[in-house]
Amino acid sequence: MLEELVQTARNRELPSRTAMLRLLAGEDELVDVVAAAFRVRREFFGRRVKLNTIVNLKSGLCPEDCSYCSQRLGSTADILKYSWIDPDEAAQLAGQAVVAGVKRVCLVASGRGPGDRDIRRVEGVIGRVKDEHPGVEVCVCLGLLQDGQAERLRDAGAYAYSHNLNTSEQRYGEICTTHTYADRVETLRRATMGGLSPCSGAIFGMGESDEEIVDLAFALRELDPDSVPVNFLIPFEGTPLGGRWELTPERCLRILALIRFCFPDVEVRLAGGREIHLRGLQAMALHVANSIFLGDYLTSEGQPGADDLQLIADAGFTVEGLDHPTLPPARHDLVTLRHRGAGTHPHNP
Image (cartoon, rainbow, N blue to C red; front, side):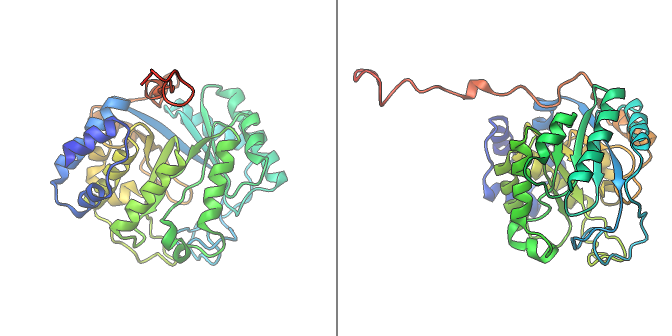
């Protein structure tokens, strides 16, 4: 089965549901699963690791009720809460990350979605970051987009927009009631149509079944994102999911491998929760994912950046430079123009 998954991924084809479920069920040894996923990762991304960082522009006091989030409505988690930080501070934080080797800076703000004034603020921050570091990718994550906002962010210099599906459509209502799964899909559509690179992934460890994990992976594939962040639930005390600790390092690696097989030539990013759930197996995860966050997350502290860089070096990988394209070339050889059938000479096959 693993050889079949490798060949399917190399052809950029969708794996079968049966194979995905078997992968999660643990019928194959974990080291064999990771080795198979690494063959795919190496073919499209070599031994490079792309570094990303988060700049949290506005923290806490969100009106949405996403059960996993420490910034949610009603959260009693003891997190930092502040309104919009100064653009100079945001640019300074981005600059420090770029010096450390970061290729993508993710500008994030809590809330349902941006208003016109919020977009103007973020436009200013994007401008400052790009002025000082023109080669860095700027990704923006502001919640649900309205018509025309993606275009404004693109024109300001943003490269990508991030908005996760987080969980499967059938159980989304159990996780959040203040907006819908369809709202999230629509925001990804607006971002893509507005000229931004779509970034969308999920949070695992919220009680989802194997079937729901596969459903989510296939739904993400239909959205055709350029990058897929893989988060593992951080159970914040003071949130509805604060007591849910169900992930093991092996479970995380199997989920990560499933995402790689579904997205062979897409940036798979190891995101929130990797330190607390993968623990000593983080190096194995680098054999599957080709991208990680460096430093802190939105409301939780990450592993020290120096430790991440040492982890990458010790595992035999190298940091991807600003001038190196992340995604492999488009497969124009897979596009075959029709020269047969209707409209052709009757003797042509």
